[in-house]
Length: 196
Image (cartoon, rainbow, N blue to C red; front, side, top):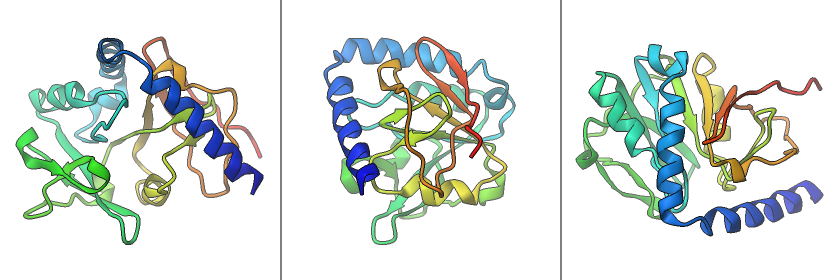
C-alpha cells in the first residue's frame, strides 16, 4: 500500500513541475529530444515505430511522427480500450487519421483502423510521468503500457521525457518492464536495470 501512495505522491509532484513549464520551453525541449532520438540506431533502422500521441504537458511527438513519415517508416499509435485497459497498435498515415478519444487523448480513428501485428513493431516510444536511470517508470496509473510491453518483447523500449521528470528511484513492481533508453533534452540514458 505504501508503494501505491509513494507513486501517487510522485506523480502529483512531477506533473505539477511539468505542467508549470512554459509552453515555449516544452516546445523547444521537445524539438531537442526529437533530434536526439532520431540519432539512435534503433530509430534509424526501425521499419515500424509505435509512438504515443502527446497529451497535456507531455513531450511533443508530432515532429518525430512527421520525421518518420518523411523517411517512409510505418508509424503506429495506440488505440485504447478503457473497458479492458488494453491498446491496439494502429497505423496512421496522416494526422487526419486521428480523433480525440478516451481521456481527451488523440488516437487513431477506430473505424477502419489497421492493427499491426505485435511482432512487426521495432520500437515502442513510452510516455511517463517519471523515469529513473534504471528505466523504471511511473505511468499515469492506467496500466496500458504494463499490459502492452510484454506483448512486444523484440521491440526496443525508449522513454521520452523532459529532464525534470527524471527521479532518483522508482520502486518497481514485479510486472514492470523497464525502458532500455530514456531520451531527455539533456542526455540519452542507457538504462542499467538493477539486479534483483
